[in-house]
Length: 513
Image (cartoon, rainbow, N blue to C red; front, side, top):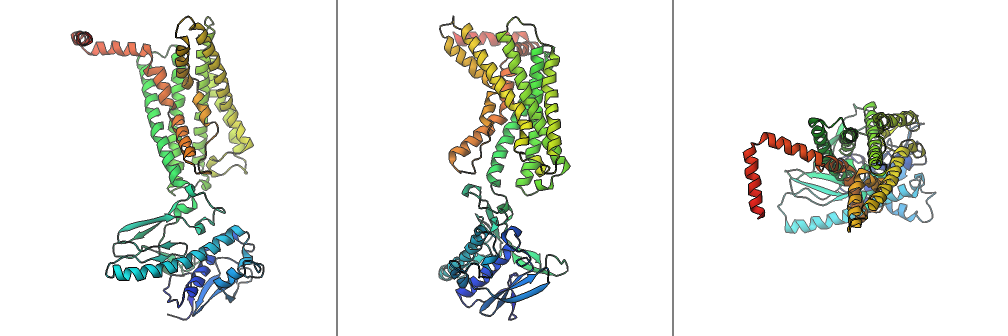
C-alpha cells in the first residue's frame, strides 16, 4: 500500500488508533456532503473535486478551487480540533466556516460522532465473536461512510432507518414515521454486496473502483413506504367501485331503463364514477406507484403525466357535478311534487360542460412557467381555487338540498308513530346520494406531520370513504332498487321453469310454518 491513499475510495487502511479512524471517516463525511450545493457558502471551494487524503497518522483535505483549478492540501483534518472549535472558533475553522447553516453542520458532526461510536462497537463485537463464533462465516461489522452495520449471517438482508446524512439533499430532517429504510445485502459467501463506481464521475475513462453497496435510494423520498400502503388500499377499493358501477350501468341498459330521466341521471353519474375510478387508478399506478418505486420522477414533468393529471381532475369535477344533479333531481321530486320535469339538456350541460369550462382556465394557468412542474400534482396555492370552487359549491348546495329534503320527509312522516326513526333512516340513506361524505376529505389529512395513530386512522378512513363512493351509490340506486328487483325476478322466471319456481315457493311456505 502506498503512503498516500485517496479516502474517497474503499482501499483498505490499517488505522493505528480510534482517533485516526475517526479523522478519516469524518473527512469522508465532509466529502460526501460536498455534493449538496445548498450546504455551502461557496461551492467553488467545497465541491466534489476536493479529496480527503490519508497520510500515515494524519488526514488532510485537498481543496480544489474550480475557478483557479488549483489544489491546496495543507489543511489537516482533525475531528478533536473541529469539536473544540465549535464553541468559539467556528469562523476561524477552515472546515466549519464553509457551512451555510447549522442544519448541515450538525449532520456532518453527527456523521463523525456515529463513525467513532461505530468503531468502538465494531471492536467490541469482533472481540466477542472471536470467542463465541470463531469459525462462523459472517459479513463483518461495517461503517459504510454514513451509518454502522452489525455483522450479519450469510444470505440475509439488513435494514436500518436512514441516517441523517442521507437527508442532506432534502434540506430538512423528516419526522420519525416519515423516515425510510436503508438496505444492505449479505451474500451467501459471507461478504457484503458490492458495486463498481467511477474514479472520476466527470471522466468515463478514469477507471472503476469496487465499493460495498448500501441501498439508500428510498432515503431521499421520505413517507414512501406508508404512502404506498395507503395508495394500495385506495386502488383495491377503487377497482371495486369501478366493477360495481359497470354492473349498474349494464343492468340499467339491459332492462332498457335509460328512457327515464331519473335513470339517465343515474347512468351519467355512474359514467362519471367510472371515469374517476379509471383515471385515478391509472394516475396511482403510472405516477404514484412509479414514483414510490423509483421508476419515475415527477420532476421530469412529461406531457403524458400532465395529460393524465388533467383527465383525472376533469373526471373528478364531473363526479361532483353529477352528484349535484342527483341531489337536485331528488329534491325536485320530493319537495316540489307537482313540478314539471326539467329538460335533460340542463343536467347534461352542468354535468359535462361545466367541468370543461373550469378546466380550460385551470390548464392555462397551470401552463405558466412558475406552475408548470411536477406533472401538475402539487397545488398552486391561490390559483388552485379555479379548480376548488366548483366542488365546494356542489358540496355546499347538496348539503342545503339534503337538509330541506330531510325537513320535508319528517313533516310527511309525522303521521307515523315512528316518524323520527323513519326520517333518520331516510337521512342516512340520502347522505351518500347527496355526496355529504365528501366533507370528510375537503381538507386532506396529513398524518406524517404528527405521526399520531389517530391521524393515520383518519387518513385511512378518508381514503376508504373517497374510493368507496361508486360502490355505495350503485348499491343505493341499482342493487337496492325495487324496479331492478322486479326485472331480475321476471328474468329468473323466464330462465327457470315455472314448476321449479312453484316447488321452491312451496318449500319456503313449509319452512315458514
